[in-house]
Length: 155
Image 1: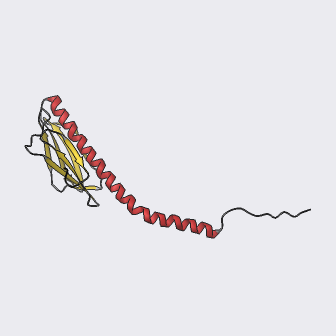
Image 2 (image 1 turned 180 degrees about the horizontal axis):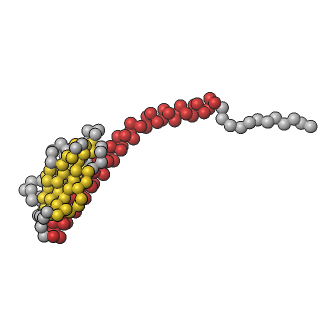
Image 3 (image 1 turned 135 degrees about the vertical axis):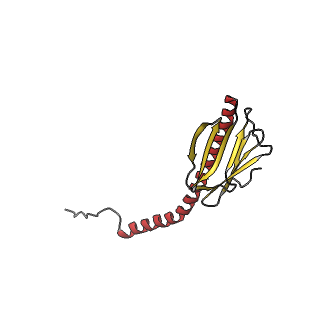
C-alpha cells in the first residue's frame, strides 16, 4: 500500500507578518488623508446647515409677514447658529461640529424683511473656518439669495 503524505494547510508565520506589515503601511499612509477628508466634510455639512437655516428664516419672514434674523456667533470653541422672528425662535440654537471652530468675521446677524429680502444694502459674506485652516464662504445678496462656496470668497 502506498503511504499518504499529510500536508497541513495554512499560512506560515512569514506570510502573516508580511500581510500585517502591508496593512500597517497602508494605514499610516491613509490616516492623514482621512483626517483631512473628515474636516472638509464637516465644514461642508456646516455650510449646508447654515444656508438651509438662512433659507428657512427667509421663508418664515415671508410667511409671518415679519422680519426674521439669523445670528452666527462663537460659543466657546464652537460656532452657534440661532434664528428668531418677532421674539420667537425660528429654529432652536445649535452648535456646529467641533472641527468647525472659527468665525473670521466675528458675530454676524443676517436680517430678512417680510418680503424675503436681505435688509442689508450690500451683499453679506460669512466665512467659516475649520481646524485645518480651510475657509468656506456664504454669500447673502440683497435680493435674499443665499449661496455658499468652497473658497474664502464667493464669486
